[in-house]
Image (cartoon, rainbow over all chains, first blue to last red; front, side, top):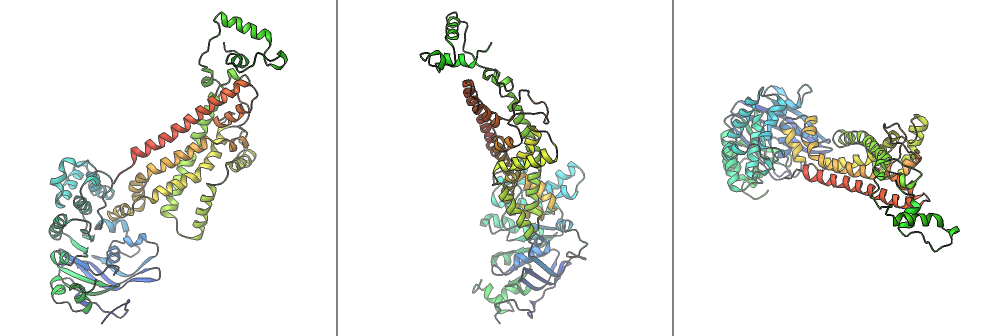
Length: 271
Length: 287
């Protein structure tokens, strides 16, 4: 079956449920930009201690979906989201939720490393400061160090914490952004192609880091690299033109995909 | 004791002594007494400090630009205090908060048009609104400052919007991504990055306001004022208008005073523009 447009009747194949503790669950999520539908009826769960990789050709809605999870789509005027997305028990699109608090619980790492043009220390300390996570200077200093440590950056920068974060190399900047994201103690970290602007060595470091981080966080990662998805993720979801075609354990997706489109994409015939 | 400008002109050789006495501006008696004084060494050519320490005068040798300088400084202060905060706030609102609708489009078109309105129209507006309607004093730096503020306002909005737009969207995403509210992301991240550009644009707008004479003529700042203004409500002159007044005076001495005043005005413009460049280079954040 070939889908060349959004198909309202399409049902996602595979298993959308996670075997771990559910952190985020998405039900019947539709996204529209003006009159164009970008995502059609997405259902998926994200579990703790696992990496969920979102794969699919460009323009299939992966990034749009990711940005629904922390409501970053709110900044786009024409964007409309329907359906239910729950972070643990709370509906994040309900009127009662404070979008600022939501984003404090959902960290995000972007495609291009985007540290603030401030010092390394200030980059990490900014989030905790605005959320009042720490009460004293000492506590904040410690949190900054722990976050940098977790991001595997502390050894490289500990004697120059007050130099600009923008002076670091690309890979270091991306790890700084990860440190910034985990400093606000989120439940879930969203990563939008975190390695696409990095060289293979920096990529390897980030992948190792993701492997360590998944013990404590739920991670949703968009990636264009099949091999990266295979290396770091436990579950994978294949998107195609706004439809979520198939979700399953990464091993199953890569070795025995159910849908023709997934098979073609994995084997490199499309995409 | 300063000598009369006629004497000055004679010494500088600008008066032809071979002309008959009736068609000269200086008599034979005067010429002979000046020559006597010169041979006794009593006439010296000195730097005329009066230019910087006194107000205007009918006598060109006693006329100074201090009154005009103080007047211009008072006006620019008022202009800056009004136009800068208002202009920057308006730019932030239009850039970050305003909904996209026809009314806002209409406002934007009008701001762009206002920046191109001839300055004398602003003078007319000031005359009608501030002086005739609100009853503010004529020739006062307060009114001049208000008029120049109206004129600089759209320029600052346009400059500020351009620098806000040039802040990369990745910084907005980063700030929102760590859970900053919209206000926090603007005031902690976007505004500091845009500020050098905003300041540069504002200072250049202010420099244009400093050199403006047409609107000030409309609100009566063209009056002959000898006193140095001590408050924004006193009558005062302004640098460009002083240049205009002196250039219009028949006495030869004023020709030289005009040149001097123009040089002072240009120095100030140069200083402000250098300040703008210096600020931009100092606070520009490089990626």
